[in-house]
Image (tube, rainbow, N blue to C red; front, side, top):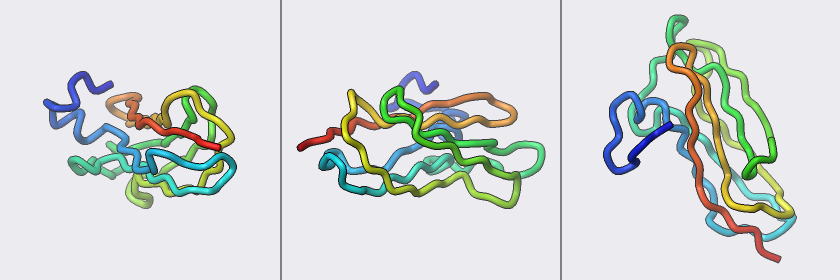
Length: 112
């Protein structure tokens, strides 16, 4: 977990899942979400050090998981979502095989 977004270490920059999504969406309409690990500083992608998976949640409701393979997949996902409600944030969790789990989030509002 990143402690201070304004003063991140290199380790935090490499592991923070950065979510790109609209700030507000209409209930039931599709919209695109992108999650990037290593956007702020490139993360290694080799057999000894890589991102194993990225999970995406609407607040605490599980949406999807993308499993990754060292050296053959990049830790970036794009997905279209359709939400009927949310109570807070889109959350992304990633797992690095050496440095464990990391979380990133962004606020999103679902309107009628």
